[in-house]
Image 1 (cartoon, rainbow, N blue to C red):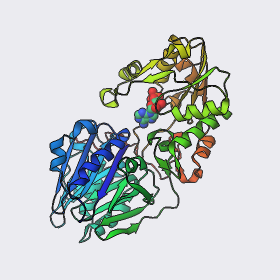
Image 2 (cartoon, rainbow, N blue to C red):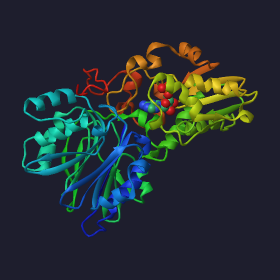
Image 3 (cartoon, rainbow, N blue to C red):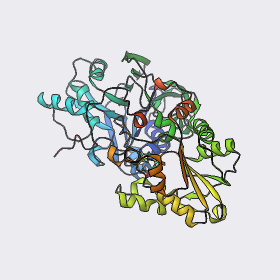
Image 4 (tube, protein in one colour):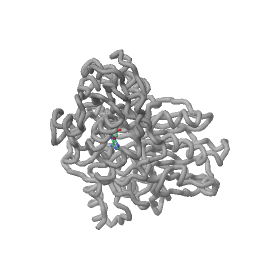
Amino acid sequence: MCGVCGIWSPSEDDPTDAARLMFFALYALQHRGQESAGIAATDGRDLRIVRRMGLVGQVFAEPDLAALTGRAALGHTRYSTTGGSRIENAQPMLVRDDRLGELAIGHNGNCINAREVRAELALEGVEFSTSSDTEVVAQAIVAAPGHTWDDRIAHAMPTLQGAWSLVLLTPRAMYAIRDPLGVRPLCLGRKGGAWLVASETCALDTIGATYVRDVAPGEILKIDDAGLTTIAELGADRRGLCVFEHVYLASASSSLGGSTVYATRERMGEILADEQPADADVVIPVPDSAIPAAVGYARRSGIPFREGLIKNRYIGRTFIQPSEELRKHSVALKYNALRDVLDGKRVVVVDDSIVRGSTSGPIVQLLKRNGAREVHMRVCSPPIRHQCFFGVDMARRDELIASRMDVEQIRRHVGADTLGYLSLEGMVRATGAASGDLCSACFTGEYPVPVQLELGKEALEIV
Ligand code: AMP
C-alpha cells in the first residue's frame, strides 16, 4: 500500500504553493506508507524531485520545500509491495524521453505482469535502474507508440495487469489513472482553482479541498490548464475495490463508497456482535484501527466500551524490523494496558484482522497479565488465507496463520478463551457494496483477474 496525491493549479494561482500543500496532504496519507516519501514539482519547464527514506516529517526540511517551487506537484508515501525498501525504489520516480521530456510517476498498487513487461522492454534495449514495478510502468509508457504523452499513456495502460492508482506529472499536465477494476481508491478534489487527486479523501480534507468525485475505475484522466479530460476508459466486466481498504488500510476519516470508513467499521462491529456474541463485562479495541469496530460491537451488544490498551503513537513501523521475533516484541513496545479497566473482568477484545497471528497472542497475554479473567477475541474480518497480489504487503501465503490453522487452532495459539471472526457476508454487507464490486481475494482466494504468478516482493530484484 502507498499513498499518492497530485495538485495542479492553473497558472494564475500562487506558483509556490503546490509542494507546500502537498507536504500536508502527504501527512494525511502517512498511514498508507511509512518507508519513504517524495514530492516532484514543476514550474512548467522542468521537474524537480525530493525523495528520501523515512516519514514525511523526516523527509522534507524547509530548504527542500523552498526548492520545490511550481504550481503543480506529485507526492507519494511508500510501503513497498514490489521491490525492496530502498532509496532507488522511493517515489515519485522520474523517467525521460528524448522527444517528450520528463515524466514523474507515483504509484499505489502492484503491476502483476511487471516481470514479463520488463523482460520485453529489456529486449528492446530499455535499461532499468530499480527493482520496482513502478519503473516498469513508467518505461512501458515511455516506450509506447505515440507523439504525445496522451497517446503513449493510452497505449501502454492496456498492456499492464494488476492494480494501479497512478499519478503522473509532466511540466504541461497531470494524469490520474485507475486500473479497470478500481482496486485501489483514487479521488478528485478541488481547492480554489486547483485540481487535486489523492488516494483518500482525508488528504483533501486536510488541505481544505472539497471532494468532487472518484476517479472512475479504468479512467485515464488528464488535468491541465484546459481543465479535465478523460482521454481513455479501460473497460472491465466487473469492479474490484479492495475490501481490506474498508477493514484496515484506509483512514477511518476517509469516505469510501459513500460513507465514512469509520461508519463502515462501526457497522462491521455491530454485525460481529450479532454473529459472534460474548458473555463479557467490557469491550475494548486494539487501538487505533479497531476502535470504530469495538464501538459498534459495544453498542450492539450492550456491553460497555472502555479503552483497555493505550497505543504509543511514536512507535512507527519504520522502527520495527520486519522479523518475526521483533514483531512479537513490538506489542510490548506499542501497547500499555490499563489494569483498572481489565482487573477481574471478562474482556471482549476487538481487532480488525489477524494476518500472521504474531500480535494477537502477546495482546491476549498482556490483557491477562493485567488482570483480565477471560479474553474473548473478536476479529472484524474473516480469516485471511490468501496472498494479496494487488498492492498490499500482506505476507506470503505460508506466513498467514489462517492458511495453516483452523479457528480453534488459532484460538489455542493466541491463548484466547474464545475467538470469533466476522463472516465474509457480514463484512461485505457492512461496506454497502455488492460483493461482485469488491476484491475479497485475501479471504476467498478468488482473484478478480487470473493470477498466474507467485509474484513475491523481490520478484524484480536485480541480482
Ligand atoms: P498480525 O496478525 O500479527 O500479522 O497483525 C495483524 C494486525 O496488523 C492487524 O490487527 C492490523 O491492525 C495490522 N495489519 C493488518 N494488515 C496489515 C498489513 N498489510 N500490514 C501491516 N499491518 C497490518
